[in-house]
Amino acid sequence: MVQVNGNYLKLKAGYLFPEIARRVKAFSEANPEAPIIRLGIGDVTEPLPQACRTAMKAAIDEMGTHAGFHGYGPEQGYPWLREAIAQHDFQARGCQVSAEEIFISDGSKCDSSNILDILGPDNRIAVTDPVYPVYVDSNVMAGRTGEADDAGRYGGLTYLPITAANGFSAEIPEQPVDLIYLCFPNNPTGAVASREQLQAWVDYARRHDALILFDAAYEAFIQDPELPHSIYEIEGARECAIEFRSFSKNAGFTGTRCALTVVPRGLLGTAANGEKVELWSLWNRRQCTKFNGVSYIVQRGAEAVYSAEGKSQVQGLIRFYMDNAAIIRRELSAAGLQVHGGEQAPYVWLKTPEGLDSWGFFDKLLNQAHVVGTPGSGFGAAGEGYFRLSAFNSRARVEEAMERVRAL
Ligand code: MLT
Image (cartoon, rainbow, N blue to C red):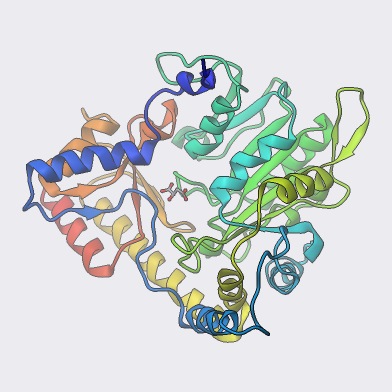
C-alpha cells in the first residue's frame, strides 16, 4: 500500500494563487461577459526586452549547428552568466560575491523551497506575517512544522508580524531562531528594509549562529538610492545569509524561467555531531544530483539583461510598472483607502474598507468591479483586513481597474 506524505495533509487551503484562479474561473463561467482585470498574482504582462529576444534567437540558431549545439550544461549555470551577474548585480554595488557563489536556476520559488534539502529538520524557523506563502508551505510539506491552528498559523513556526503598527518591518524575535526568511522589497506589503534594519538582522544571525534566507526578487524596483539591494551590502552577511534573485519580475521572465541563488563560500552550518559544514558544498551537491540546469537559450537571454541595451530596456520595464503602481496608489488614496507600499515595489498593500475582511473585499471587487486582487489573509493571519494589488498589467487595464474601483 503506497503511503502519502502526511505533511501535505496539514496544509490549510489550496495554494493561494490557484485558489484565486479557481474562484475567478467560477465567476467567469457564471458571468461570461464580465471583462475581468487581473491585478492578483504578480505576473508580468509586458513583452520580453528586445535584447533578450535577440540573444535567445541567436542561441536557437547556434543550437541548430553541430558547432554551436549545447547538451547538458553545468548544473550551476554557464560561467559567462554567473560572471555577468557577479559583476553587475553584486561587485558593482560593493558586494564581494564571486561567480562561483552564484547558482543559476529556474526560479526563486523553487530555490527558496529546495534549500530545505540541505538544512536540518530541527531548525527553529521564523517567517514574517504576512509572508510569501511558499516559505511556509514548503516547510509544512517537508515536515518542519506542527499542525495549523484556526488562524492558519502552524505550530513550531515563529511568526514576526509586519503591520502598520511597526511600519511593516520585521522585528527581531525575543526567542532564538535558527532560520529566518526575509523578503525585501517585501511581497506582499511592498515595504522595504533600511540598511540599519538589515544590519540588525545580520548581527542577530551572527550572534545566534542563525541563517538568513534573503529573497531579493524585487530589488530592481527600489527607487531610493540609499536602500540596499542585496543582503551582502550589509557587513557580516556573507557569514550568515543566502540570497535568492530572479529575472522574472525585472526582465519579464516569469514564463521563460531563470533565477539565481547566492551561497557564499565559507558560510557554515552545523552537523548533528557539532562539526561545521560549508553550505556551498551541500547546495552544489544537491543541484548536481537533482537539477540539470536552465536551458542554454534562456541563459543567453538572461545574460543580455546586462548588456547596455538590455539594462536600458529593463529600466524601461521597471519604470512602466512603477508608474502603474503610482497610479494605483493615487487612485486608491483618492477613493479614501489607506495605502502602503507601491513606492519601492510593484505591490500596493491597502487596508480593506470598514466592515469588509480580505476575502469579503476580494468578492466585492470581483463581483462589482470585475477586478481581481489578492486577499491579505492569504499571506498570513496578520494580513487579514488588507488586500494586495499588483502593478503588473498594461497601463490601459490598470487605469480601467482604478476607474472601476473608484466608482464602487
Ligand atoms: C506573487 O504574486 O506573489 C508572485 O507572483 C508569486 C511568485 O513570484 O511566485
